[in-house]
Length: 493
Image (tube, rainbow, N blue to C red; front, side, top):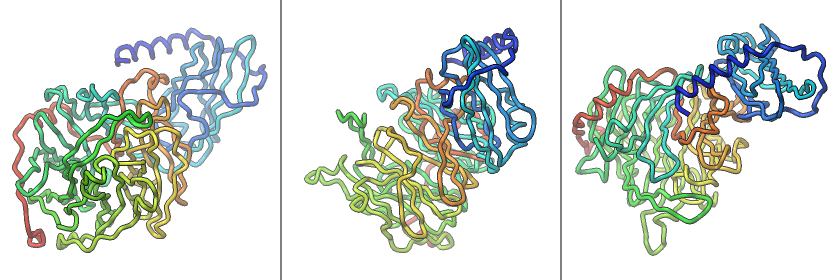
């Protein structure tokens, strides 16, 4: 649904609400169950700064009355003939801010011959905020239409979405692999392939495009991870292939013919590496510990056609110590193997306090967005024990990101229809427990029933990315700056 039609729908809903005179709902019968609503915002844990959890009541009726209340402040009451409930944003925020740590009660009444009251919905408001913005790629789920995509940011405290970049500006080239340094919207790396290829680096007031392909690297940089010091970015460099399969549990497999890990010195505009992270094996998806002293990554053996391991490969989880003062690496340590798990490990990401590592596992490969069986797991880095998170569904759970305070996880899930990936948020409490996740709220409660794109690689950031689509287009159109390669990185320090 386009924005114009959406605004008309919202206006009509408001008109219907005004036309509907309030009735006395003190006389009602009770239904001993909770109402069916969409999206599912029943018994969830929410941050005090989230946008209104607008929803549709999936119960037949001629009239709907909603009361939203908590211990403090004014109750929000909505009565209308439409089942689509759109909560006044200012009243909502006021109620949540006044009730941090309290229960939010949502009472739903539906009228047919008479009013019926359902069992109250009880949501918990915690004290910890969610980062204010989410950055993601929007891409069509049908692979042959992959070329219409963009990078967007959404203000999670309201419903404002703006484009950081749309590939209609660059002859439908591929834009992907955006990543930030410690949730900082002023430090971003974003990759462009095919038309106007290159990597764009936002570093404070500096915005530049670089060519990370050198005569000593196998390909241009791909999947990034900023070092916590903001001066180094680790990248994988990959020869990527894609195959379509008949397996009903996945639509395609993305795999690497070869892959290594390289590092980019932002200030010196130099790439360096180490033989321990650029071997004949396929190293991929680097990620840093919050103290910057360890690089975690995944690895699988080199392609061997006799073993048929091009596609049917499984990745192990490894780490290597790194000294940011000397730019030197220690010895590789294997943390968890696919032989131990029976599954392939991918997308490792460590909590801001350094205690937990969340990762995905699937049957083969590392590119889980097309795999229905992909699930999220968590490892305690003190004990190295791991288990499957209880936020998983029977559908695909994939790429995840931590909030800056470590109390929220965002991840994508296809649980709504097994086709479209949607951002979900789960509260991660101080004991390491996750709570029932909720879908990113939308102004139109039925948004996800008609929206036909996938949310890809959602990244939580603490504020707005101060680059608009026109500025990004002008940078992408320009020629990339060449990057040097340093054989002896310790000489840089």
